Image 1 (cartoon, rainbow, N blue to C red):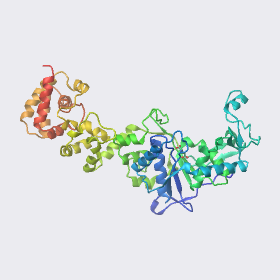
Image 2: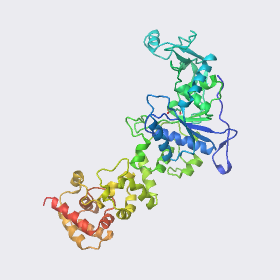
Image 3: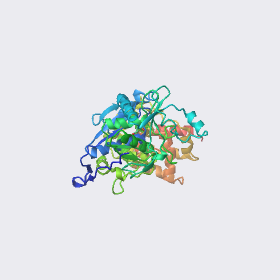
Image 4: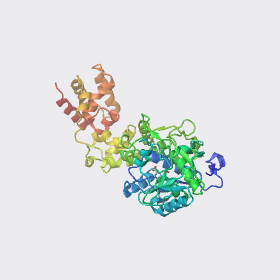
Length: 492
Ligand code: GLU
């Protein structure tokens, strides 16, 4: 096997800007299989590839690995392209999409070459055959057909002749130089009986045909890497530099799974996460900018990100933290942008509509007065409706649980006093607050406790926007009508 190729020496560019590789035109690729929604772990890998390419004046190739005809659907490819664009990897800024299926002739040629050079052999063993020879314990293929000199035929796959001795060392920018014992690597299948290449070979051939210099991908593929590097060498090619970025896990340290966890980038987008918050957060999976910062402009990511600084340990995808991030990004928006970003939910065009809501009730002028208040409270844009609907609907939304929580003993008397005070006072947040404070104090209630029944009566909820400013927007007439309506519903 040819020795592993070391990455070219990085040199520091002017004024501490990203390092550039001398004499290497960097070409990276993101190579998703279009088999479902776009996994956040995939989005993270895509962004890292993107940043790496930009830092080195290189090219990012989007390659769709579409050779599994049973699982691929063209709409998933469209979804990948859209989702990439959403996080800032826009069509036109990269090469492709290129399709693995277009390279079938190259895959077949590589398989022929490996056979002709003695690096691969045909094998007609079934799994049961191997099991029978091994006393029913499958511990990899046993090499039975290595020297049988079989030719192609039905039921005959092509296997790689893995060297029995020595080690395969890979150069990995995240993990150093992991070393694998060749004796532990079975003679693996590279082409099926129908002649089509399996992932291991197709992926190598595509990377070679596309001139890929750096393979930045998820840790899940690390076990494939020695096999792939052996293939590169057997094909007489110089392998790429590898970078296996950490597996993404949930709070229980389990690998994020489609069935168990919310993993689809589209789900976050449709719920009202901002693309800027999302991509900032994704870049922090295993990496951090300088100076204890986490929320940073994208330009800082592009300046400071280093694959060599990525922590190889599993990266925790912390949805709570992402939410908090998103809230910060929302608060940093100019109000006009916040108003615009909320429109899909308010006008009922969002992919995930907010139930129960009547978009016909929406009034942009009223929303303009509430938006600055809402902007401080909303962590995810889809929450906007629940925060402001009280101002648009004729009646506050009915929520029995909120009602029970807000309307404790004595609520009726308190509301009676509040109605009397609110009927007279100047209609400003400060005056409303002073009156409620006084009504509460007269009954031994602190402001928080005194607010609860008023909030439920007026907004139908136990939490929401700052109350007195909300009442100011709602106006005296509607506020009093709601308070009186609540009093009528309460037992005397
Ligand atoms: N299609 C493979 C995947 O989605 C790509 C593997 C690679 O990046 O080499 O996992």
